[in-house]
Length: 276
Image 1 (cartoon, rainbow, N blue to C red):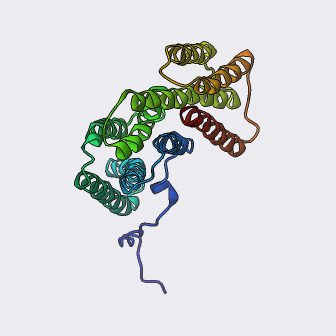
Image 2 (image 1 turned 120 degrees about the vertical axis):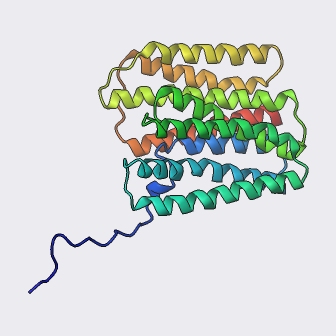
Image 3 (image 1 turned 45 degrees about the vertical axis):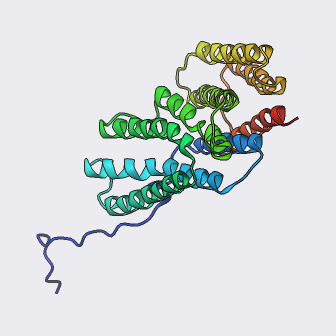
């Protein structure tokens, strides 16, 4: 006969590692981070130790958001309590990597990169504040801020190579931020169409028009290469196609890979414009 009673406490459920504890839900955000880094590295044409530290530290800072969000939600009773210990360990691990990379860059004399620490810190703080206040971190505003913020990997890679700031560094950030931001509008429209949710199509179209006009004007002024304009012409054409009627996504996974491909092709054209 079983002598256990219902009143006896149950054993604490052990925490288990799951990819949701560290990988961000927005899979396209990987392209927002890595494509700008690749473009900045390609334009600088050097892959030195500081650039490796920027990549490692940037990836760690990027991944830090997810376990920090999980930990906050678990502390507030809005997530699995069993996730709290492992999320905390991931926070300490990733935070330690960020700190070590930052110290390494300073020891190598990369003081120009200090200007990028504040925007990254503010971006992470904004996400955590949204999670702490029980707001969604997947609003349009948060995604636009994140897209522009992650594009800072382009100037980070360049500053780690040249050590000083000059206009081209920030013009490339502007191009990569614009590419990421326009991608947010396009993807959100396609997802809304897929789930038959209302979504205003005019902001999608006008954001692409404004983006192309700004990039075109910058090229006319001679500040950026003309080849960098080509991707934004393509972005506008697909925005016009999407604005005409609902365009539901047949296969979400395939669509995600297609968007990564578009980002890579666009980044390659922008980099080639500076290299040729």
